[in-house]
Picture (cartoon, rainbow, N blue to C red):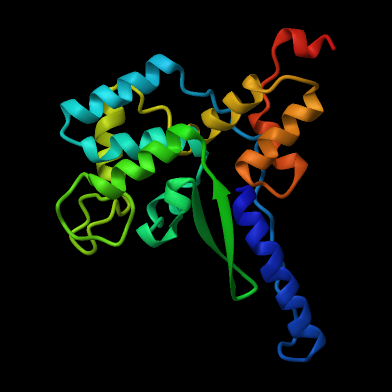
Length: 220
């Protein structure tokens, strides 16, 4: 409901302008939907990630293994990962460039990868999952362009086999971000800054969901 309300805020502002410019006679009353507290996501455990990988193998969805591992080491959003092309890889796999559309302009955002993510990138450049020609870094089962596509059905099959249907794909991003906070030494503020840099969030508020504090942290 929060996402819907945010979109209606923009629509409401547009209606207000329309009334002021005499494009319409009156502005309809928009009623906001009730907003519930954010659902708390529980990160994947190491054993659960292992179960996902095993499920990929047993269900013949091995094309999802490297994307899952890449998720865990980059906290990319789903659309960012699916849209990665081979041409976006720079510096022998050390960097990938995300194309972000802002104000109708494309902005290149260079993301430095850790060693594990670099290894995954190089592997998919030299030994892709599929022999089908595709411009995308991660090959998949899409009959259109050989990419991962939406992979919703395959992902549901894998989670069901791993008995993890209660956890979605975005929880992997959540897990990766939380792990950065746990590995980073220093104050809570410093860990928050590390997560913000890792996730590429713009606001401090957005990264709080990833900052799971231990009992020792709460006593600081």
